[in-house]
Length: 329
Image 1 (cartoon, helix red, strand yellow):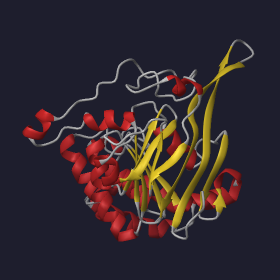
Image 2 (cartoon, rainbow, N blue to C red; image 1 turned 180 degrees about the horizontal axis):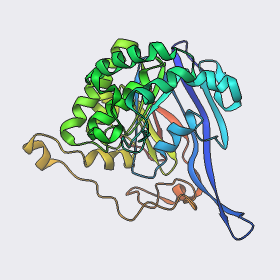
Image 3 (cartoon, one colour; image 1 turned 45 degrees about the vertical axis):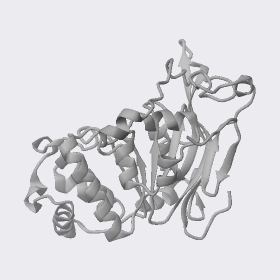
């Protein structure tokens, strides 16, 4: 995959397997195939959506990109730097340019630290501000995410879920990074708050020219915020295209099934639309199916699907799919 001049992040054959250990001697008896050889790139200033069912490897992908998990194999290029080969002090310096917004606003904030200490910690660690400057910087950050600057002395338990997530967002942008991995940042929030948080993320993106990897399972929200969308299933990527192209012309049967579950606010269109109901359960990532991983639930599966893994191919300019019998639908 050739890198373009405006490419910020490039993933090549990323693999993340977790060993399963048993017995007194903790012998490895197998592996969880969380991510199994995915490749894509994210351009500067864009929002890349990553969708799929729970357990398909979306969050693991985000954490492996930031080296919170050390990938089993593959390459993660941030600009010209291969993060998988970067360690120690050099990796610590790179982390200033990459941040993460976590899914659970209740678990991602230290309950024993005040808001000022939570937001000030990355500024101190990366020596961006001195202790005397942090108080003013924290108030600016709180104002940036539409929270009262006087909240700086409060503890996380004094805030609602939406307010805690805003604190997490402020912490992520404190170092003015280039890339932010948003790991389902709205899934734990009330529906009434979700739109406010997404609008805040869009405003910050325009203000600081941020690049997002937006991980979610809410397909309607992903369509709203993303410029391109990738679909994952059981550790592999099955389709990738521009937002409107993917939603209007899906090729992979799994993508069609996901999109058929998204309600359309038009009763006449909704009544005529055909739902795609998948049968069976998602196979175990410990022992994934041979060939195409989706074949056990696929309505168009044939013998070839069990024999060989589908090639990741460009079916249209910028539209990639992994399916032997991909058809527009």
